Length: 143
Image (cartoon, rainbow, N blue to C red):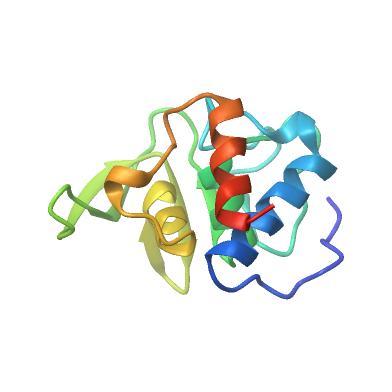
């Protein structure tokens, strides 16, 4: 694995969206809206590492990765307790196999990405197509 060239984390929704678009353009084969974080050679992708060939990250996965979260994809059958936001915006706990982790905190990748991109739950596009996700990222980035 290689380290990323720019270890500074983007700040603010427009800068985050722009960084995600740059990462997707640099590694289009890694972008896949069907996977939060598919990591073929490891169960963790720290923010200082570039995804290796065969990895798959959706827009939310890229967002969490580029904003300083380690992406975790546990082996099949394993699950961890993760803090998530319910539809009312209240915190809840869920057992999942793919999540973001930072400083001992575990969060759903989609929740981390929504906060970083300044999105309300009703504004997320995690279950949309790749063209729709890219269009939304371009709109947030202002480009």
